Length: 307
Image (cartoon, rainbow, N blue to C red):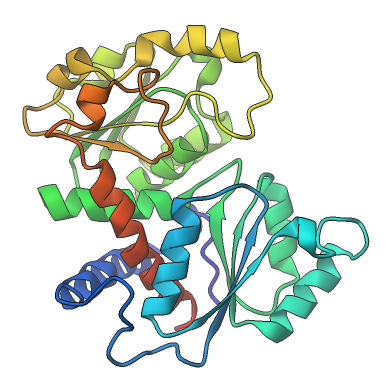
C-alpha cells in the first residue's frame, strides 16, 4: 500500500514518475473540457474519501476534479458532521470504517501527528492534502509548473522569501529529491525547524538560509512566497507582520532574480502584504498555472497510490 504523506518518504524515481505522468496526462487532455472524463475512465470503480478539518479552495476543487476526470466517485466529509474528532468514536474505529467504504483517503488537517496517527489505522492509501508540517501536493504542482515553463528543475535556483512554514518544509524535501538549489530568506525567529534542516544536510542538500531576501533571490530562476499569517497561526500577528515586512516580494526583489525568472505563490494570497499586485499579476507570475496544475498532479498522485 502506497501513502503520499511527505516528499522525503518517497523514492526519487517515484516522484519523477508522478511528475512525468501528470505532464503526459495534461497533454492528452488538451482538447477535452475540464469536466470531461478521461476516455478510458480508469477509476470508474474507485471512491476517494476527502476529510477537511481546515477550509480549502484549491485542494478541494483540484482533488474533486481530478477524481471526476479519472471517472471515480467522491465522498466529502466534514468532521463536524461525523463522529470523527468529536470524541464519540476513536480515530482507530473511524479509520477502519472508512477503509470499508472507500479506496483512498485525502485528508487536510491541522496537526501532522494527528494525520500520522489516523494513517496508521487505515487499510487503504492516504494522501496528505496539508498539515501544519507539510504540503507535498502543492510543491509537486510547483515543480511541474516550473518544468513546464523553464525545463528541468535539476540544478536550478529556487528562492523562498518569507515565513519558514509547512510549504518550506516540503520545499526543502523536494530540493533534496529533485536536486535543485534552494535559498531561503526569513527572519531568524521564523527559520524552518532544525529537524528538517539536519535531514537536508545529511542528504547533501544545496540549501542556503539567510536573513537577506536580496541574497536569496540573486540570480534565482524562481521566487516563491506564502501568506505571513496562516489559518492555524496562534501568534502575535502584529509582531509577526513587523518581522516579515522586509520580505515582501516586490519589483525590487524580482529584479534581483534572473530576467526570465518566474514567481509562484501557493494561495490564498494577502495582496499588498507578502506580495505586491504588480508581481502577483505581472508577466513573471506563474501563480494561476500552478493552481491549474494541481488537478493534474493530484490525478497522478492518486494513480500512483493505487498502482
